[in-house]
Image 1 (cartoon, rainbow, N blue to C red):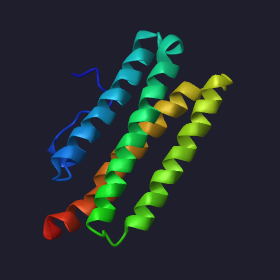
Image 2: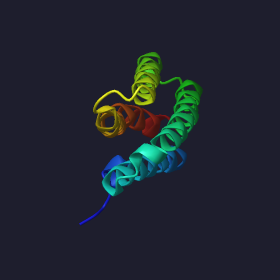
Image 3: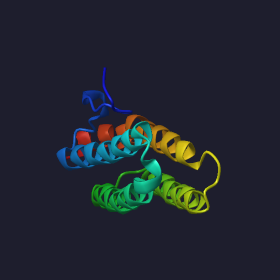
Length: 135
């Protein structure tokens, strides 16, 4: 049994080494946050991990967008809009955490888990198929 919320496996691979490494790092950050909840020290380190998540997410999303524009991915605008929605929602959750809304820690971890697994396995897989025929 594992202590992780999300375990990387090849089903998450989008066939691009750079994007796969970045996705692995994002999953590591989510797992670090989850571990802090399990160990009961989330209050002390959540804001630090959330800051890391937001910073790294922005780096990753920008990298992904550059890749999609470079190869003129037909759904790049739609994909970019999903990224903007993620940024907005993450900032809302950050605000909730700062104001200690009840259950905000659980909302945050659940949102990050659901968003990233869905985004990688559904949306990123779409560009993966496109790029495999383009590059």
